[in-house]
Length: 455
Image 1 (tube, one colour):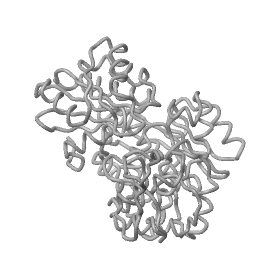
Image 2 (tube, rainbow, N blue to C red; image 1 turned 180 degrees about the vertical axis):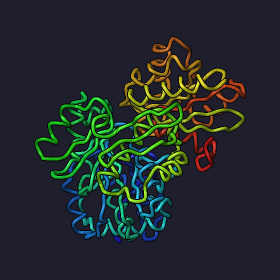
Image 3 (cartoon, rainbow, N blue to C red; image 1 turned 180 degrees about the horizontal axis):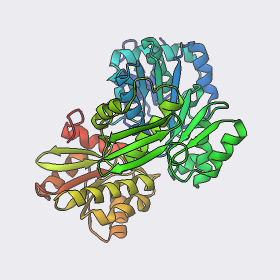
Image 4 (cartoon, rainbow, N blue to C red; image 1 turned 60 degrees about the vertical axis):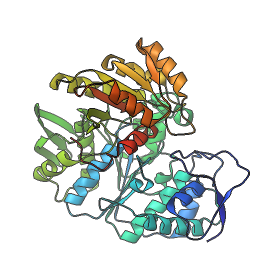
């Protein structure tokens, strides 16, 4: 392969600042060196558009599976991918799942039959994409998306599940023709790229629809822009509560109804939060629409969904003698769901005070994230998210104090945040970590608990 230049890696996907002495990516480079180099390919962190990815994809000439599922939406995409993957694997399918961003290791993004790809597998895929690229400028995400499908094609899988990175219409994953697609919900997030109202954002996410194919919408209400796009292109749009959904049977069980009938009684998903039942219902409707329900009955669902876990999504841990709840909520809608989860847990558990460790990126609405959580938090700690785009901890603390009416400690790292939280809480208290993947990841890395079972 050709030589190229790179700068040291970070969790973030934005192009790094220019430096006077670039590092040369030599043959035999490690995965971390490759990832650092990928950050230099494009001057833009995000460069929405399908032409570049389509060009390189055509050159790769990848074998496609019989089924491709696209999962878009503002929140709940990762949970939906995890549940769909687990159900399909239990039904005997060979499945690839592509998600982003990662919590701790890039390998988490490219999973084949439930196992994260190795460094060697990813490097081989990177080399193939680079050979096919031949000078075409790709962003970090675009290059990684193509590499994931190179890995999947080599594994000869039955189903690819692709999580949309940003929006839908111009996202790199949208170069692949889906069998069916899911839009989990639409709320305000990434407004600088997608628009400043739900209707505009909905129009972008509606881009995953295809004429003659079925798209499921899991949230409520459905934006008019989504309905209009379905009519204009001749796509079938199935919506929650009308075409599929949840019928509650009791405090700890539910039933699902969809185009092919009903299933129940069903146990609640293992992922924490009442909204996960809604996500599960949409996932079942997606598999139903794609013709992938063979082998997935009530018994299968009850065996599988209660065991599904996902790092950083309402993840409950016991570490350093304390109770932790870790969630990547980074927009107002996600914060509202997290607040509801905290309130629900408080009504069922005898826990003491709640201390929140928060770190946000500078494009996030602080009031929209902190406001819903304020009533559930007794003590605040602001830390810098591990990203060049982090909102400075001093500024975050100032806004948290103004919004909550409570003092907010400023710390400089995940290690310091953990130590302060541990020293200033008791064994019966809860420590909440939230605000960003780039906050949750460093905390979980430091606790060394990412791969341990959740409670």
